[in-house]
Length: 339
Ligand code: GLY
Image (cartoon, rainbow, N blue to C red; front, side, top):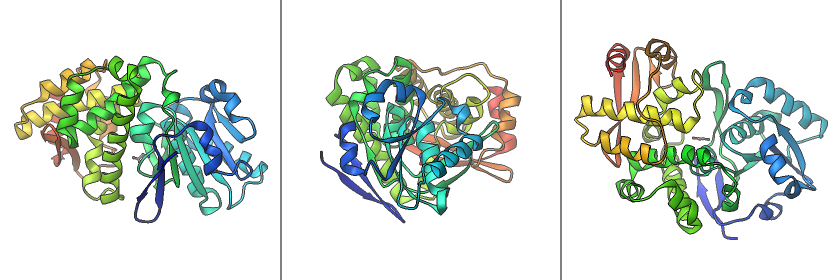
């Protein structure tokens, strides 16, 4: 098992890209660690978790809320967790977000690491240090930026994922290609989810390439003053849709990327909106969608990227080059209503 260290402003993260779940015992002391996972992961991997302290949560974004934080903290107190305890989040984005958040506030901060178990968590949710919870329909409204001390990838964990989970992860991969990597966009155009599912080596290299895109962006702009905002491509509308409709994160941001590409065509003369939409469809993701525009715009206006009457919107200048464009809320209202 090899590891690579990436430095952030206040901490470093050790990445184990080619590891196995069983390597966890070399990284964390099972007596001083508490694993946080959800029922699905626990049921699928119970044998691997023998000998570890485990807190099992109900699965789903609806549990990424303060009430769950309270129950985790109560269980940690019962388990006599102290400042030397390490929390290990094993799961998708909900688990990594809530684990990092609890670790950041318990006794004013203890160590934590992740074993992401979905494509989306490996290429995106586990990386970057944003940890938090939702409040009502407002996603990630409360949280903190604090980096995990390690992230371990075991690609075997992806084998049992349903197709929809793969598609979910590819939404973030396509996002990275759109904003930062035109060559990867061309590679994606030539393949499909099933090609990557069949070829673990190809998938491992795609996951690492995507993790590195995100790591580099975060290293340069951890507190989202500039370039990190590019990672929100598709997310402004996506987040507004996600908690109001029965959509996965990947599906919601896919619709968000579709509309952001169309807005890019209108405002910046972006020529390849149809190419972006075609790739999203090729990976089984929804694009054009019927939604209650007024209702969604109301939520969108509360987005963290809004400053007074303007929204920082991520658009595409060309494939591989995302740009941040302030758009007046009135203008955005008009454009989205007309699309
Ligand atoms: N934890 C996700 C992020 O920092 O973007």
